[in-house]
Image (cartoon, rainbow, N blue to C red):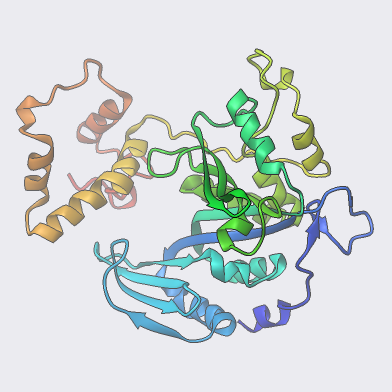
Length: 364
């Protein structure tokens, strides 16, 4: 916490072209601010003393809040909206830190990172939002909207837009202007980009006076995006995470993106920035990957349903899926099945299998 206190207050808020505005080699042709927004981290509750000290130092007092949230039975909240969650229903020793965007907006870019650098020690990012703010650059969202409608983009299969207006004295007045790429939730890609009018959202600016491009990284993509930034913690890297999420290229009928030229305005924005495409390697379809998937997605839900209703996990499974006799097995024997049978035949456990510890031998 003392280290954070020494780092606060020494950096400018405004960043131009992804570079510190005090830098001599700063390209001043474009102007945008870089920052982090909503951030969520999970990890061992042994990290809570350091985390509390860092947050207390910056955001003041916290107080206990009743009620369970996100499968955690205990939580504390700061006045700014930051929450500390622990004591999960599964009895684990992990905790969750949820930092809202309003709290991050109070800090400069480098102060945001100075705080996260301490909190992230021993923790894993499960949400990591990065944004670019454009001031007094009217028309950017309209350009992005036009690109979406023409298919002049790559990097997302799903896109949409939401524009709302109200009738004023001088005709229609915009109240919301937003274009989105990607999908949120468990079925999403882990990369969700929004281009929206931040000034209208805050009701502080007129249309086009304060626009934001923001990427919400979630799950493994959040972990990878944060790791990428940690390896080279600069404003240009943060800007590259945003601009590399969706590429705005001309829809000229070519299949390969390299043969589709950048749209002029997107090429102008990305000058001086090395764009980064956050990719997560797919887990091999083996027993370890299958077990980890069940452990992460299936088992927690079954446990919660059973705990909340007083039923056994077997009973919940039967209620949701039906009798085992009605389930049709796959026609082919998978690699995961062969590895599972091998445990019974040889007693050898694949390294990394969550339920069995190879160092202690097979318990079967």
